[in-house]
Image 1 (cartoon, rainbow, N blue to C red):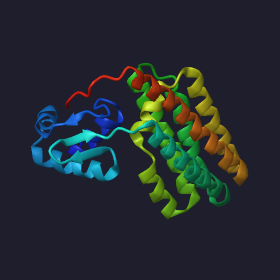
Image 2: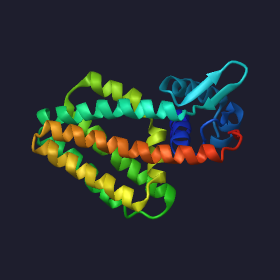
Image 3: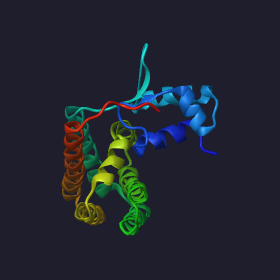
Image 4: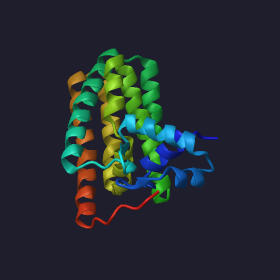
Length: 222
């Protein structure tokens, strides 16, 4: 059975607990048939990861990000992942390419998945496999740790939920181009393509954030 941490994190990442929503321990425990202690511990862990905010006299809420924070986060991610792609082009081996290729194949299959949430979940899983494969090929542990703290999984998932078919195809094409640049050991090209790819996702997400802010409603409780 999934842990309290896994259950709550998935609910946040997939948008079932929306930004700003209050996370009431008793209600979450009842929803997942858990005691309150593991729920409390999970919320503290998620606070450390930046997905939850815990405030005195208000309790826990799903952390929301302003447009400026999203821009800053994605700009940093683009620089870090661009560097990772450059290093991967220089340091990869055949096994790394096999991992990346597997993710690219899974992404192509996910594009054919029907259903909004299921499709976004499949795309998100495949996308994560590709990006983690590239980071692993970079052979840079400190960079990998920085990216773990920089990449907001809930933002990535929300971007895939907002992608139109043409944008998803473009993302797939970027993955293939980045993979080929890495395989050819074209470091500068791989890095530049990765930066452009990350900023594509940022732009889709920002468009959605602007729309949601225009019709913003009070936060619900969870």
